Image (cartoon, rainbow, N blue to C red):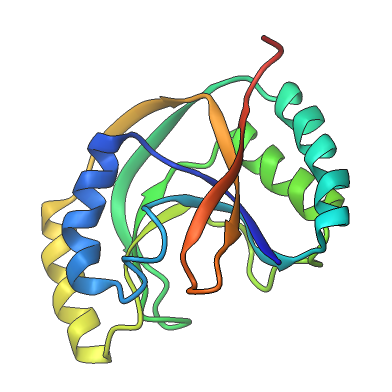
Length: 170
């Protein structure tokens, strides 16, 4: 089964992101707007039982934190993906490193860049046009994050929450 670890932003921010994603992201219907902390990886149900315990331990290590979304950026020329930039925090970077080092799936193919995808798989022309428009609109958003989610992928490609982990020692 495929698993992934993400942070879902507030409904308010998800609604804003989805106002763009429904036009510019062909994966819009597969998963809500999110920050990927560990991209899709394959594991058996037995392995999942083991790492679910590890995820509980990891969640206790980190306190809730302030999520700051500050601008529109792009991964061009690597890919024609447009995203809202999420300012890195020690908590986001620590969670990413713990998931990378302690869970199945091997190292990620790219460095960790916290972000929320707005559009992807755009043609070069569409990317340039959409990016210019969104850059002018901009974003300045802050909210508190107190949890992350283990997702699993259904046979139809849709991602759904398997378990939620609350940050901190409560």
